[in-house]
Length: 439
Image (cartoon, rainbow, N blue to C red; front, side):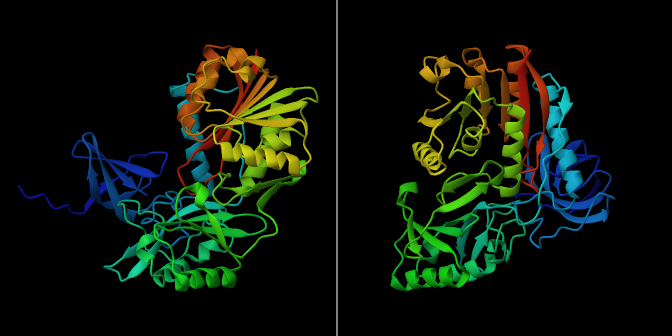
């Protein structure tokens, strides 16, 4: 039986999801139209069919909402990197606030005593970490560099990116031309971007070793644009610098309010938005209220983003992280900043059982900044730690709400405050922060 050809349709948008998809009811079935706003009449075409709903691509806005604005990026609508450029910054933050509020009410069955004002910063050119996909597309006769398309697993045909930091956003087209010159153009699947305060690094993932001519092209590109160029032929431990031949100092960012410099490698995890990260660290430590004799625990500590500035105010700080390389970097950062009251340990925080010495030792203050899966294992054993105050930084409102519900309803903590952190403008990603205290 031949598959039915999809044709454009027209409908009115009744409501919207938090990630910028308008919802229309068509013949008794919900259709999610990416980029459509409530109150609009739009033309769309269905791209994916599900049992209870369909997903569609927006073709034309026939009657526009007053909240709609012109997207800054030419690739918006095709590129899957951003989903909210068609609405104002304030509108985006209202969507994210409502998402956090809905999750806390629905999953956690609670509401904070105080809703915090959003932490905001620059909304363009903010992204200092990114992974760009690369594909030699024979049909187009060229190499594409960029983010995946919104409605397909292909790479977006784009020349620039408005959210990438530094000069990188304007180099997408030139990166495409660079890779096209290489003999290994079909064996180079991605480029990692790391923008520091002192330099910008590009890490080229290569499946075959580049020849001499390839190396010359890569090095020349680095010289021309004053970039550090690395190759990654294998795992993370295979990353090697090729331009410049040597460096005087590692990549770094600073937290000036605490007189802290954080060194990092181009493949290390660092918060995507440097300006917001500085504000977030300062605000989180203000909310944690560490005293000079407090023992503070920083879980999922990475390279010391919170641990190092906390050590300026607390009696002692223990940072725990599952990645041994990040722990080694954190310890080195502590030494470089002259901090003797902070230490770091390696531990898989998803596999703790309550017998860990650091867990049984307890703490006065606790800061957690987990991955999307949240901190369920820690929250379950919070009575062992018994902190007076907890600051929870979250990249997923659902797991934050789940863990907040356990802290409040099962362990007697009070949710003092919560709010969003605008870490990823123009995307549907919701970063947030919550503050808990013992009753």
